[in-house]
Image 1 (spheres, rainbow, N blue to C red):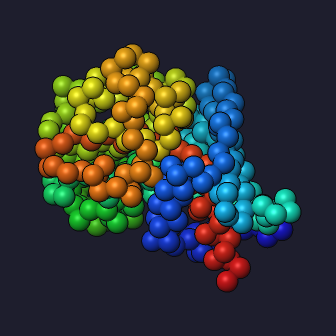
Image 2: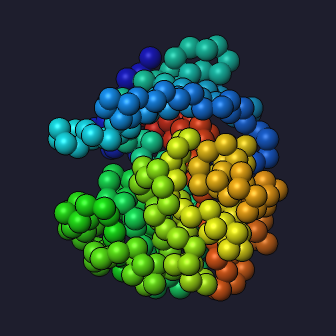
Length: 315
């Protein structure tokens, strides 16, 4: 079994190849060409945290993956990253373990940001005036980095509950190509930005329906488990299109689940991203549309990025 460290993984990983692989994974998922069981979850109270176990395979593929990812939200107080984890890639014919990817959560961050980039590619306005980032952690950073593959806009407003963390993100040396400013509140961020990405572990809505102006696209990334929520459910009633990575998963958890359970929208109104990628009629067709992508993370993303890194290591 090959063992890859985070440093090796970072050297092997190609962002363009990852974006293509994750797109193909979403398509296969929505076509019923994958096997992705429900997510396994562990929840912790003291200190607060969670652990997600995701696993799956392509019916016509060579591998299956098991991914373990954790989030412990008091870790930054101890100078530790909140996220961690690893991936295991297996041979689908024999069950033999092929690769242990000791990525420390890096691949989860990248595949999650890749999904955000793909959603923006097909759903964001052609003319993005300003990008709004709600949240200040690792995922806020990676979402912004990968959005460079989806839009030419480099104007950014960042809002976080801790202004010092927002300022630290805005001044990150790896974001020097971006013109980052700090938003004093979410009201101003929503007023100025027509591409908004939420990346927090919030348990209550941060972005409200009355704040959303016509022509805005929202990608909600943070509510990946039961009890998490970033968007006002009324946003979904207001939206012209609601896109999800997995309809089955997003009626159970994530922001769209609140809107479905509250009767604001029907399950049938949720369009899977894999279908959007393939059908231009499901993509943004007007600069005035309000679109929402609720992305909770599915194992096919983990499979695709793990396989891409493994094959790069083998070549």
